[in-house]
Length: 168
Image (tube, rainbow, N blue to C red; front, side):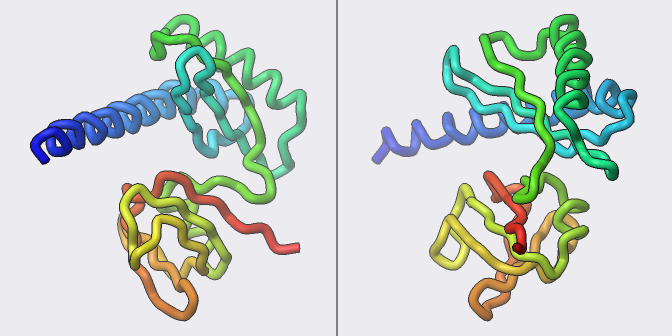
């Protein structure tokens, strides 16, 4: 039992460090993306040794084209080369959020009230780490979801990954 208790805070510490790095990267990369006339929708840093990925999602009312991603990649790479916030090797990917767009902030979830989302949680809610439901509201950093007729409240900090489910 003592070993489990000793390991658990280590993982929590890594999660906080990763979240802190992602916040730092958003602050650092928002201006160069906006200077190109786009919005930095969000980013993900996926650690996997030499195969780590820094994935940026950029958006624009007029849409995102491959040329937009290439230009954003050049601008962001220049900033990352100078600031060097990630000490290990990684691959930079720049993409549009797409139809099943990832959701990162309270404002983004708020914009999709009434829409269906899928969220993966770090800690279970109502016995599950994977929920699919309708966004019914956002109160501060709490997301209200209707899942199979049940109203659930999920802390945004508990969401590892959230995506809009596209309607076709």
